[in-house]
Amino acid sequence: MPIGNVPPPSQHPDEPPFVCIPINTEWIPILLGALQPLKYPEYWSGTLEESRGARKDFGILLDQIMQAEDCGMSGCCLDLYVIQRISPDTGLVEVSVDNGVHWQPAPGSIPTKIVEPVPPVTSGLAATKCDAAQNVATQIDDWIEHVSTAFDVATGLADFAIIVASAILDAVLLILTEGGLTAAEVQIIEIIGAISTAVWSAGKSVFDDYWSSENKDIIFCAAFTTIGDNGAFTDTQFSAFWNLCNEKLSASIAKSLFLGFISSVGRQGLNAMSASGLAADSDCASCITTCDLDNWTTVIGTEVGRTATTVTVDAVLSGGNYEVAMETSTVSPWTQCCHFLPVADSGSFGTPVGRVLCGNDNTNPANIVFPLGYDDAVNLFFMTDASPFTVTITFTE
Image (cartoon, rainbow, N blue to C red; front, side, top):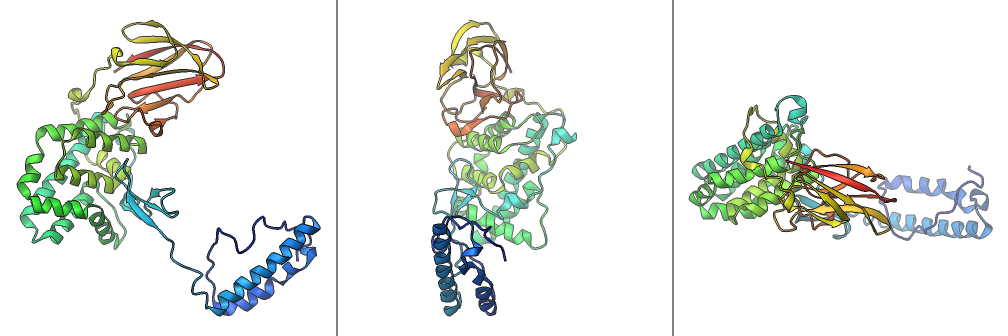
């Protein structure tokens, strides 16, 4: 038995948070016997008062266990109270176990069943991020065609919903364990059920007519604008893609079904789509937003020079540190973007550099990303240091 080396817990055994430990009822007397050393002062470390408190708590613990034994522990292991929602930022299904205080992606959801490939540019499957974006657009075109065909072959709403769910799984090339496909279809139908009802009621012509070349181009350019140079999406870039499509596509039940499709597969599904084909020499020239330095404003710092492609700024004291911050328009859809490269002329700026990726709302602090890197187009960036510095920023397409 441990002698005087167990510190008394800071909380009483009948105080939350609680845990459930399901055990066979025959083991409860054995457990009670095994706990007997806790009643001796020699077991505990700490002061005499702390030892007395711990031994009193031991009595409470025994009472709790014996009460559980009397009622067969029927109330010990209640199912966890879980609530669900669709994220207003990404459209993903989220769950909360603390009544909405914190949210997390739903365990066992479709994204967890997708085999996320090596980014296509990294693996050599695609030469450029433009080719990867074309792969995404091609898979979405196939999904649109699949759903359109569902109107012709479905025998009713329930059958239509199953075919649409199958179209989503086909689009992301899922590799599922045996029996996983049915569960995946059920989850998708739960996400898009209400939308499927509206689309089915509206009919094939409403769905087909929505998918003009202009709307398809919006999706293609949204993919190109937000995808990484390696041909894959991060969580932030996935959110930017979803929000950019939501901003630019006109209101329609067809749009709602499309966003439900993207929400159900998440970042993992989008990356499976980007690596799904062999697009080559794709043309994304029409999607490139001109990097116009006239769109950029220095919001923190003092400009001391500006050319056609560079801005030189003296950092100013802000919030206890010296800081430089620049941004483009703060109006949706936040696609006035550039690549940027800062070089310190004097002093130094701390790393990483905070920035908001193109297509994301640069008025929302949650969209700021911090890993150091200059591979992405941005619409806001800032840098800080404890000491004064001057920096020259070069802007490029």
